[in-house]
Image (cartoon, rainbow, N blue to C red; front, side, top):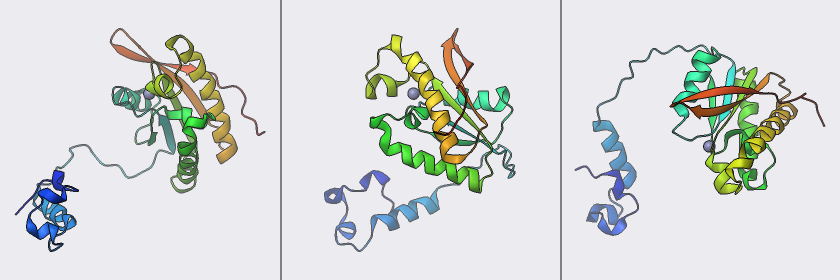
Length: 191
Ligand SMILES: [Zn+2]
């Protein structure tokens, strides 16, 4: 018998076998997974790495635009992605992003070492909820703060990884599309 995943954690609504530990939720998940038809992506798989990574906001409204920019605009198919709320903002020294800061730095170091990443693209986007909700910035002040954060993040990554090929962009909506404007991050120097 199959039970939907929504039964997980709802002990009282599980049948006797679950409550008695005879049938574990994990076993049910395995059974469910094994009976689902496998979806086969029709996209071609190319195993070679491109040697580039991008750090950007996880906002789903702009994810495909980021992909399009990296693929078609910068010519970087198969780039490695680090997507989280605010994107590069987590590397700009904000106290409210401290938890993510170390994790992202570790991931970037891993990508440089294990995936051969030698180019990193940072993208901030207009109206980012991280700046509005976490940092409580008004829209008028947001863009300047985001651009300053891109520069800080680039310097932080340079210090953490030794990689100097870091470029920054600001994604701006208009006319139903999104334009990606380069942002000058300034010189990359150690402390
Ligand atoms: Zn955002």
